[in-house]
Image (cartoon, rainbow, N blue to C red; front, side, top):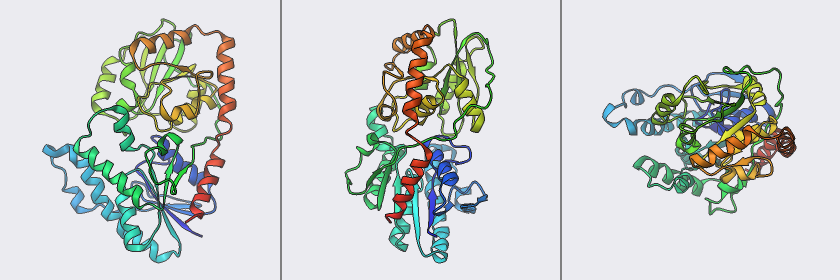
Length: 374
């Protein structure tokens, strides 16, 4: 059986976003390959996978310099890449066919070196391309971002295949003969019990779920005026979030109509999204937008900026679109707050039917076909 080494920055058991969710789907639904995961922070095994228990490199433990804190995260990742090479070499000695599936730029150096030194082919999955993000946010890259953009370009150049989650993301690649688009899917998404929101039970529940970053557009929700019959809930995590934006979020919370809830996972997340009245996605840049698909499958109305990859999931006949400014967002929330039951049900029913074509089974089937091409 062929071995797939997965190098990724996200936790498949408590996924932060689409990257970790893809890996979670692979582990649960794929049975044609054996997977070795290189995150290093877990030491578990299952019927078709195991984790590498990466040793701490002494150099990493001595690397932190408070005066250069902005560079330390990048430095840590690059040193970890060198540590992974030992484990990749050991795996190659034990198995005849090995493929690397590298998620984003964090471990791409390991994949490039494994191909150069050991002849191991690799697939480069760009879940959140730095190149495209800088273009969409329209600002000059800092030195770290510029460096990671160069890593992405080099990683794409040397990859055997380039894996994207949307047609929109694929636009950044000039390597048409290597590009593969495999969209995310969801399955086993059924509400098992009502989620009990805090606050007033008679008010509509509007939910933001995601990281605290400007890319996700959470800053647009911090000073909006909500209708009297709407409460806004923020389900967020410290992982992958921006401290400055998080501080602004904390200062904007009040117990009257806004609630900071923390992260939520697994069945509790499904129950919450199915129990909410609407999900809001004010993304400034969205390569795919898994939350949008989850909202549709939950039969919950989606309010969205409808940018980039989200357009491949939904449309204005199903979801309510707004521009990224205070006035437009407030008008859209107001429209949701007085929407007739007939219009609400029509939108969510159409969204649910559209979502049924995007399943995990189909996603994993295409990934297995991709592995078989190498």
